[in-house]
Length: 136
Image 1 (cartoon, rainbow, N blue to C red):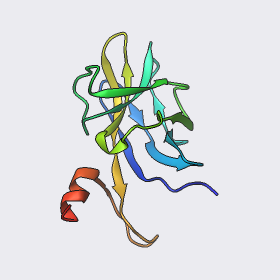
Image 2: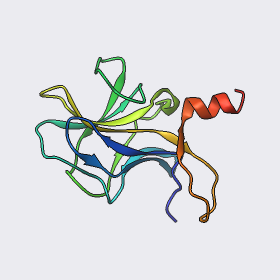
Image 3: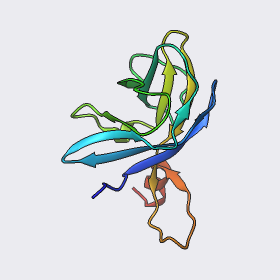
């Protein structure tokens, strides 16, 4: 049985066209970022998948992101293990980043999936907004 995502977001184009979704999932006690089958980005050198502090990543400093590794493929489903002990609530987005030119190809703001049924369309809310609405 496929795990339901805890957080997810649609990729938004930054410097290069990037489409698809990023999902935060936990399987057998291990957390992953999974890019879906619709994921696609432009070709480029030195591309990495990052968890970034900000919902919209604007700069990359050693203390505002963690690297999940080199981008495995320019399209399709792929999975990246999140280092054990990482507090994912501290991160607002998944970014596809070109290290060589310090350029964001695209990013997905991570939000909590709202409880919904198939008949009611729904969007995702950034985690900090969801927490505020719940009075926490």
